[in-house]
Image (cartoon, rainbow, N blue to C red; front, side, top):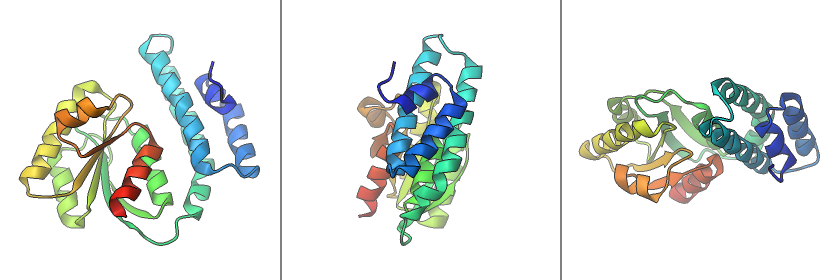
Length: 206
């Protein structure tokens, strides 16, 4: 049982309650980023239940739908405080991985904070990352991964960026990413949550 009622509601897949709570919290002046944090805690719990066999793929998909509905409500509020344009970030899910929920949340937060995002989508080959960085001259590239089997794709993509002589900073993200994975693939930064990703972007662009 999670202590935050909103995190708990998404973990229990209570669709109507989740959207209702998101609206109530926005109405009472809670920071939209804080609401995203609560939703992500619930999503992490769903991921754990899936890994332990308590939840199946259908529950995982349902959680994604609830999250999408919640983000639809939150997006206009996340965009309000953006102010001026801060810079360009290239982002994509690495080759072999077709999960985009985490990436989409990060994209939404970064756009809301005033960044120009080049979203390459999912299953992105290493050449496409290099091409997008070359064209946009983006100082930061974000790579998302959910499947542990796709770590090597991430490593290859980062090696390709380096061998192309690009000094773009690489931020990797995913629910199991840690220092060990970061060192293994050769990334500069790692983030486990969307708000970590936003914080690191702010550091780099400042």
